[in-house]
Length: 355
Image (tube, rainbow, N blue to C red; front, top):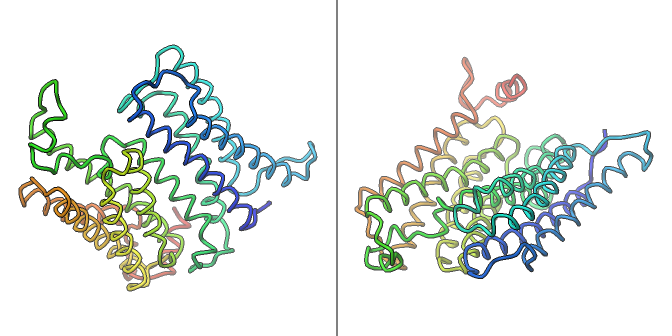
């Protein structure tokens, strides 16, 4: 059973960053370039050149693990599903070129639901999570790794979160918070008729709920395996918010600062309550405190920038509901074990093995 080194996993993560850059540029183009009528674009060039470099690297690691001899086979631990993702991404990329030729270039929600784009998403997700799988199955990092030691796995999880948030960009709270602004500030965008005020408020509330779960879930997942070093959640939250707002040409850059505050609250909570494997009580507290801080700073940033047109019940209720959603997610991820105390590490380890 072959395992990759920290350096090899870091190279994999760096090549994933190349692909993510192409995805951000492509997402920007699908939303902002009006004359987008061909598959052969500069942003697709960045995306697919990064993919081919990543594919060559992962294949080379597999061949190296097999001793470069055909009679031996086997990818390094964690890289097998990544190779499946490479093949799926390649097939979907070819299909995407055909799709664009036949049906044209999709925009907005259509781009998220295009079958070939969903195939690209699943393939990329399997590839991006390769360093995370490699680290998860290894004892090399220990229970409380340093930021440098955890960095390949952390970048892997961050890129997977960015990718997932792109798939649900139409309900991203960082993409377009126009529903929270006074009506007259955004009504002029709809020359063909105004959507109902109730509809826009509901979309805004749904965006908070979905974005909350997309950000909190990766942090709680890390806590199941390690005690993440300070800065882990801040890096993840800030990257997701920054890359999402980049597709809108940083029209809502103030929300990146709000995301950073939420990440700092998560890091502080983990350090304060010694979060990590087996620490169920700490897991619950991080799950509640993080969304409370994140969405309080979010609505504060909106109030300072444009003002909030929502009734107090809507924005305060959104903050409280986000905290409750984090608690429920924590219970689902780390259910209490009957007959044990709330922070019984041994029982938690046994429970995870049994699952």
